[in-house]
Length: 160
Image 1 (cartoon, rainbow, N blue to C red):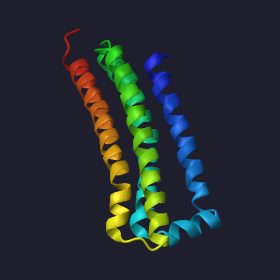
Image 2: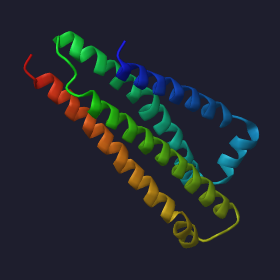
Image 3: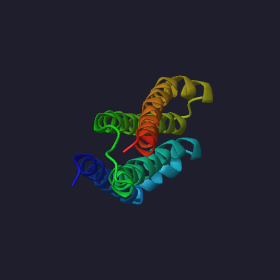
Image 4: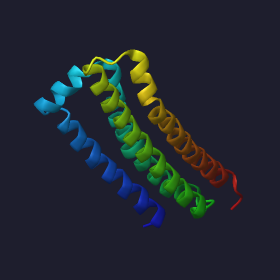
């Protein structure tokens, strides 16, 4: 089995377990009550972190790993670059983990400030640095997706 496939499937399983546990934790009464109390905007940030962990972490890593295995086998070609796949793997892990962490931080901070009665301007000023970090990690994640597309395109178009 390809080392690339093992890494992607391993990460996918880890993200699946983390997202599943997170989903269960969000249903525990004190956590659920907190999420309800902080308001929809901040609950949405926390839920968005969960969604990204599920869709990008679990689903995308599994699909990419399987495509890295299946496409070369079906076309009877070598993967264009395992090195690109490795860089992509690292960038995507850094991107998704950073995004999720800072979405949670911004959601919890903003939510607690909202409960405490802070103004919208105060809350936005407090969470702005974290949302900038979410954007930076999102860009890192996007670069990982672009590397995947590049590696697949080169694999598909290379001569055997």
